[in-house]
Image (cartoon, rainbow, N blue to C red; front, side):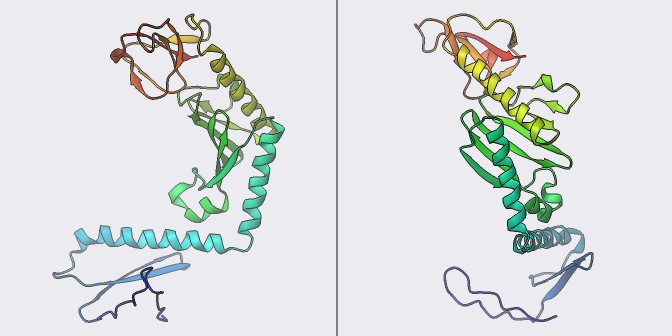
Length: 254
């Protein structure tokens, strides 16, 4: 195996010479594509049962990093990622929704199991007027997440029917279906905006939270805030235990 000289550290000092005496080599290979060896020296005997876990964690970290860089250096990678980003931008445009900024993030479906695939098929964190929407391909469907929007992690788009959905996210069958989801999310966010500041208790479509529950962003609070002011609807900006509040009641959208 040829020896590769590592570049100098960021501080510019030369890499120190390594004394090979007393070094133990630990190697691993994955499918014939990647092979890594680590040489180590310690002031005691190598305890395989105890030390192996940490050594192989280091090997796995090296492998994932090399796979990630290999994927980034793939000539077709930039073109593929640009096409994906163009598709997401067009989706938001077709839905009539403003995409202020798109940030590429690793594919959250394949995640750490395949760092190269996570780079090859990135997801996007899209900044919008209602918050950050997470979107990306998950096999044949698009994952759409809205936990970081004003709708919050508890909002469930029940109108999706038999399509996979739940609190904070749902799936869509392609860009046209995803555009419908985005329009619905923004319509629901507009309903919350219209409710904020009203001096009446939220009515149909809202349920009052029990004292044992915790309110989260996306829920609303009806009460006096600050004290000695008329009771009105306020947005919940951070998690709060309902039993700790004595100035009003909390509601969650059905």
